[in-house]
Length: 69
Image 1 (cartoon, rainbow, N blue to C red):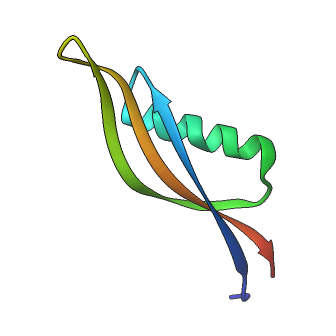
Image 2 (spheres, one colour):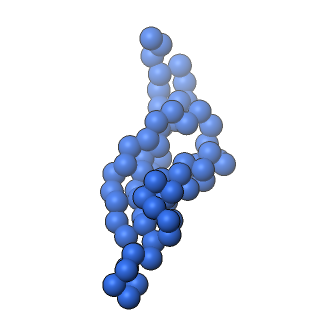
């Protein structure tokens, strides 16, 4: 296995549909500006409430990208 160096970015994705969709939205946005995305960790999950119901899921993720090998 090769040695790698990673950078880590933190994003908050949101979705009206689900937690998974919120994560996917964050990853999709990261992919527009970052290369070599390799992994992610879910750091925090929360929801925005309106009228006693979940209006938006909000998921904080840290995404790792390879910067050198």
